[in-house]
Amino acid sequence: MLTYANPNRFMQLARRLTRPVWGLSLACLIIGLYMAFSAPADYQQGMTVRIMFIHVPAAWMSLFVYTFLTVSSIFGLVFRHPLGHVAAKSAALIGAGFTLITLITGALWGKPMWGTWWVWDARLTSVLVLFFIYLGYLFIWKAIEDPLQAGRVSSVLAIVGFVNVPIVKFSVDWWNTLHQPASVSRFDAPALHSDYLWPLLVMALGFQLLFFALWLLRMQTEIFKQKLRVRRLGLVETSNGTAS
Amino acid sequence: MNSFIALIRQDIALAWRQNSAGLSISFFMMAVALIPFGLGPDLKLLRDIAPGLVWVALLLAVLLSLESIFQADLEDGSFDQYLLSGTPLEILMLAKGLAHWVGVVLPLVLTAPLAGLLLNIDTPSLLPVCLILLAGSPAMSFLGMMGSALAAGVSRSGLLAALMVMPLYVPLLIFGSSALSQILKGAATGDWINAVFLLLSIGGAALFFGPLVAAAGLRAFLK
Image (cartoon, rainbow over all chains, first blue to last red; front, side, top):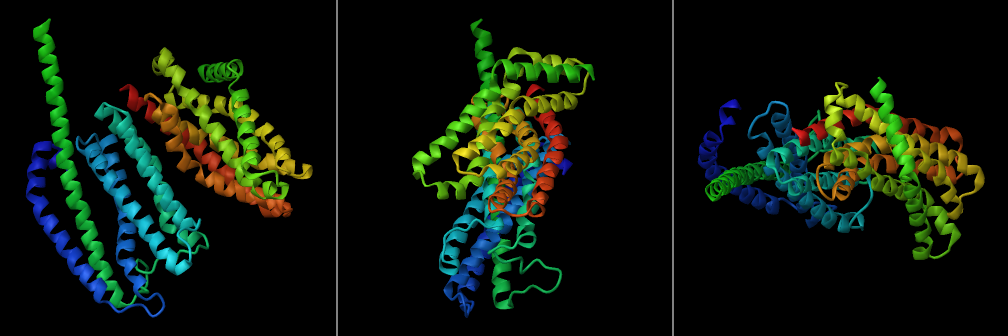
């Protein structure tokens, strides 16, 4: 972890990793989609069961990315890791995207199955709140110009917002909701037939790798942006110096 | 301890003189009074939606008052004096939160049930309604101050603070308005008294974490 505190060393690693991670992720997504479409249609849900292969991995990722964002923020705020805030910022937009995908696919799935696009049950509402927290986090970065200051302030918000993550996870157990409880991550065997479980796991792996690919790309962009910013400020200072 | 009490007194006096509470109360009353114009004067309908309506209007009124907690202090440099005073910033933040609660939220919550009359809530329910709102009020101040502190250094901080605080207010809204609707349906005290304890415990957690987060947020700006 500390080895990559140096942005240049991180950039070297990132450049080497980006292509393989992209490749693996696309391979997983293609194989996963093929498996998803060759799985038998559900006896009750029919074809709509295939929405699950996008909806569930995206939902897992929305929580994973927020956790990742919080941990990076703690690294940035508490341990002063130079890349902590950059890592958190780069993850935030991707996480917001996964959350939006979760909400949209959920609505598309809810319409044929529950007869409505949206219900105000605990799971759906807490995921919507998660989306709002992502938005608030992103707005901080927009509102504060100085990246160091924005990093510190946004980290505090990220850590406060983490309360919502366990609420999302356990909302289906704590309250009686229309949304079904967890059927894969349970202590006993998953309550999902292997015909569905395998494509789901492959898709989840694909989403996970997709996140890392996008994250690496955004990390590199952010580091370039900050370098550019520093260089511009330097140019302004030197040109001011010659003028006076 | 002296600076703690002095700060509370100063902030309450300021809130009183600037009439912050009056402003929030007027906003709240206007928001509640606007609804019948939109929905029509059906008293039964108004009574049905009253619990959620009262809570939403109340939280919006509190959100509007949040900007005032830190903005002036940061602008006129009082804040740097707090840092130099030697009293831990967290203690001073606790004082500011308490002052906001006493100076703005408490008057608002105590007058809010009057708006219930506009929404056809019967008079015997007004006291329990007031109790529920009162139980939720510390959480309003101390959750609100987190967002207010995080947004304090930004121009247009009110909007940003509102955006950050609204997700935190969702539990208050859910438990508070469900308790209110139980009261209005005439449920026994035992059915909604749990909500009072729940709201108070959210308030207790916010009382502890609010000043910590606010201090961390403000330090992040000033470093």
